[in-house]
Length: 50
Length: 327
Image (cartoon, rainbow over all chains, first blue to last red; front, side):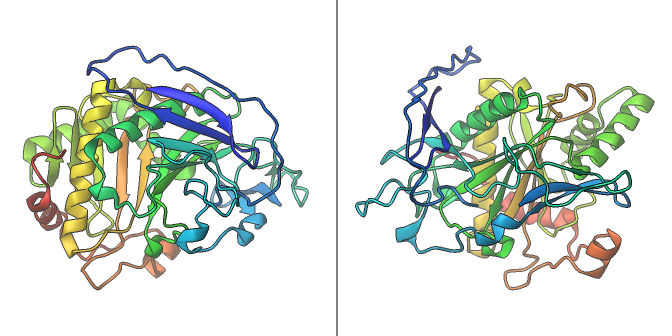
């Protein structure tokens, strides 16, 4: 499992979890962080509203 | 405006979140905020056209990392606190039209591992005492956005239902020296009458004192205080069992079964390792294909549930519909 942290268009935290074809077993899970620190406008829709 | 108001009679926090009155309400598919970006250029919550599982901050959070000042002042009798915490949305798929029970078992397996990561990540924050993973499914349960998704609330306190459960299991552990849930699931599996499905690591059962006709709890068979204590293989087994359960639920009345799904596990304040026990609880509102169970006077006003279905009969019906294998 790989984790990629970005920001969406509204400046909210957005995390994509990606899964390669992995072998089974209780392998240690390295979490790879690829944080995108670039600035975004806070305009547009309100994003994930539940 | 949002804040925590203490109810000294019920001894529980209530969240006021007035901004949630304005959240998006049942938009058409073309305006779904959880779908991949569209050609019209209006941004959505996600940035990519396809993804496995994605997690995004809730745009109308009940709890916030940097909450506003409360609208009112509290006092010693009725304390008020800022509504500090985190609210996230878990998107199960990029496909707006996906039916959960038709998603591959691998999607459920991935989802469980994402839950585990969110439990670890949010639970490591100093201000978070409890990470609550849940799903409201179906319009009957108040769902306003149809895209397949669940939610996470990271509370700055242990919520009252969880606290009551932990009080019971702590008292049982003090008295018997064993975990209440370990003893319950072992007993259910041994008797078998209320077992809906099981595999090596998890068992789905209609609880002995179910409150809803088709209520199901999914327990770790061995003592696992939280998802953080589950191996990758156990996460996969849980994912497969969840898929089998959802197939049975949707087969029962021939439509997608609405429900509330709640996960109960160890608080992240460091307490409860001996007596907290990871499990999920499903509360479907239908008691027949046409009739809903409403929470009314006895349930809401007195806290005593009335169930119109024998749990043993419900378990038997569901067990008949659980596929042996899922892909």
